[in-house]
Image (cartoon, rainbow, N blue to C red):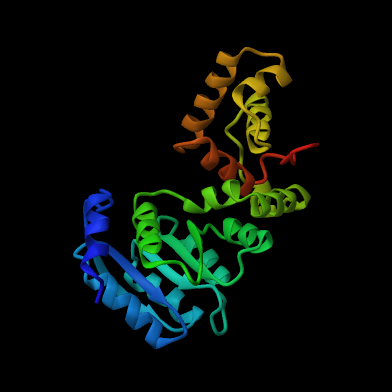
Length: 245
């Protein structure tokens, strides 16, 4: 059972969703799923919509139950977690996918971003961190964004991979609502430039930069600069410039 301290933590942090969250658990090992199930059922905020032990089952289960969240191991028999995530987001774009993985390198994070994963966590994540992430994803947030831009080694690998990535037909077919100037600003945001640095680089005022950033956030319907960068990176709209270039 989930310790009372963890339940109290969720309440005091104000992370309780306004309604019960339905969640599908996907892991090859029944014992692991049992532990997750017991912990989540100890909270009144969650309902277990179903469980799956492999990727194909997971896809079918999500089609049948249409949950709010999917908590899934990346290393699954048959269809792996990344492929499952891609299939889920294609038919159920509102479902938040949280992946657990032993691989925290940039290449895997890039693939997770392109698959539409909302959060990408190490297998040994603490229960409190996992719970916090589930609540964040349920609110429509993308904690994977913070992983990309907050860990220097991962960020460097991710940005380099996107820079070299050939835009495929999926990203080519997506129209960018941003103006050429807004894309310029967003590229510089992706490179880690401050508003002041962007203003100097583009020879515009600091207020103009702020106006462009506000417009970008509004057009992309995101909450912050990090989300805007990852949103645009997913669709191949911006060429990412690595620090020092």
